[in-house]
Length: 160
Image (cartoon, rainbow, N blue to C red):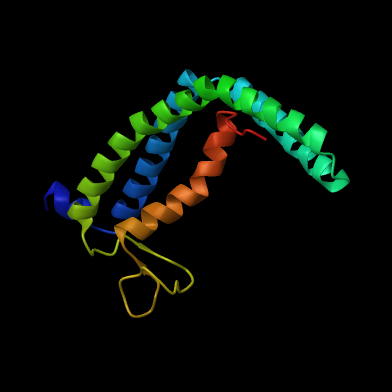
């Protein structure tokens, strides 16, 4: 039995994709942590939230002068924050390329092979008639959704 045949067998395929999801999440979070100043992003978001809160209050009071002043303040903050936002964009572009290459390569390798089973029927994206047979893309998606939050917390990448 060759490597390809072994990799296509459950639970090997299930565990392989799960490990791949963890590795890609760790890679992405490491790059993000290294190149994005998380504290500055948090600070920017807090300032924007405060300005939005003050603007809502000024609108409620119908204070056009305060609203105009807050809008100018918001524009200055947005201009000053462009460096922070460009850091995030560069990291996203840098990490998306490996994700796409790996994803499309493995999606073509696994094709419509069943790589995992769900304990409950899923109404969309499954392969078999029972709704419990998961394809590569669906198992990867579910794994990524489940693991993304713990990995971002591990790297302290929450912005709230």
